[in-house]
Amino acid sequence: MNPYHGLWLKAQELMPGGVNSPVRAFKSVGLDPLIVSKAKGSKIYDVRGKAYLDLVMSWGPLILGHAHPEILKAVKEALEEGSSFGALSHREILLAEAICNALPSLEKIRFVSSGTEAAMTAIRLARAFTGRDKMIKFEGCYHGHSDFLLAKAGSGLATYSLAGSAGIPKEVLKSTLVLPFNDWVALEKTMNRFGREIACILVEPIPANMGLVFPEKDMLKTLRKMCTQKGILLIFDEVITGFRVGYGGAQELYHVQPDLTILGKIIGGGFPVGAVGGRKEIMDQLAPLGPVYQAGTLSGNPVAMAAGLKTLEILKRKGAYEKLEKLGATLAGGLEEILKKKKISFQLHRIGSMMTLFFNDRPIENYQDVLQCNTEKFNQFFREMFRKRIFLPPSAFETWFLSLSHSAQDIESFLKAADQTFKAY
Ligand SMILES: *Cc1c(COP(=O)(O)O)cnc(C)c1O
Image 1 (cartoon, rainbow, N blue to C red):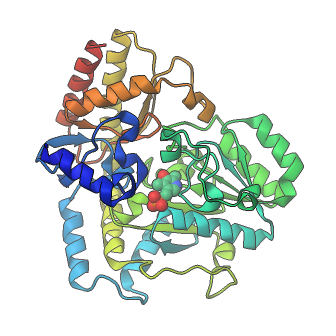
Image 2: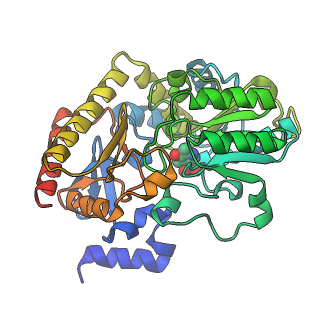
Image 3: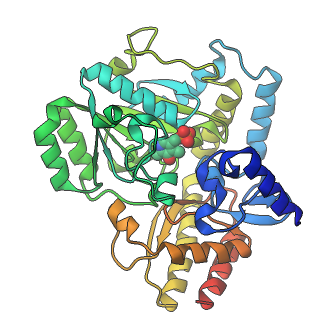
């Protein structure tokens, strides 16, 4: 038996589906998955030593690329000083300051160990602060895997066509109202009927877990206005968009101030981190000041804080986001040209260094539109690109990421591979 396949079989004996996060199994694209040995810059290597050009970038955190030398140095320094303290440490204070300075809507912040935890805490805070139970989320938006938030979520659920997860009490989901994204009518109706019972509206300001989808003009501003009118907290899940679409996240881009913001991914520089932050009077509801309990053994982990701090420092340097934009524009521009030449129907959504290619001839505004896309075409495209050593997210419903370590040459190899792939169509 070929040793690579043998390793994959062993993984499947030992771990459900062979993986520790579902989409990694490559099940929807029908290939043996990538089994990684290491990664550096824009390249990721399988255990056979084959190099792939990486556009997954750990699903968003690695905006600097893999094993960035400055991150390694910062992490090594932190590690030498201890890997966990179970007490307040100086790097937490520094990262808290850096993030609150970057996002003016954050007066205070609490660090946790994942985006999932941050979303859980944000909702608990909103319910405690407003004294209301209901919440609104949007179809195709993903906010981690906690019970309340798994109704019609994106990410792996979209990939595997799951409406939600088994094992969640119906009672729990009753308080989660799920609306189509960009649907003004549904929004207004729900607001009129339940407005005064709703604790929070939770939204990815630029949804990136059903593929990349954009809010219609003034949608976020309207949400803000409605929330203020009805005493509802507006929560932006910027786990992906935070420090990705710009140093100030989507809230800076759209000029909308949420009451609470959920962060993760980039702020951990490739280490497990999440955070919730926002208005002081809401955040002060958290224990030990207030009645909302939340805690974590590894919260504010010094190694993760060091990686996050260095990441933010590098992103703040002149030209960082300009470079990311240029890389994204070159890749998207080239890809569009190829697709048009081949007369293939597509929608290419991009903002800065993240994008999704949808195989569809109609505009895409929400999850229902996304589901109309030709997933078989995507899977075929994925397989061909993977054979040409390009690692894209193994799902039609995910966002591709570029990093500061990607080069003009990387983009060229990507386009060459895409051109050859579509030639064969
Ligand atoms: C990844 C993600 C999460 C969950 O973060 P984890 O660290 O995987 O728990 C939440 N919200 C959004 C928008 C995400 O992309």
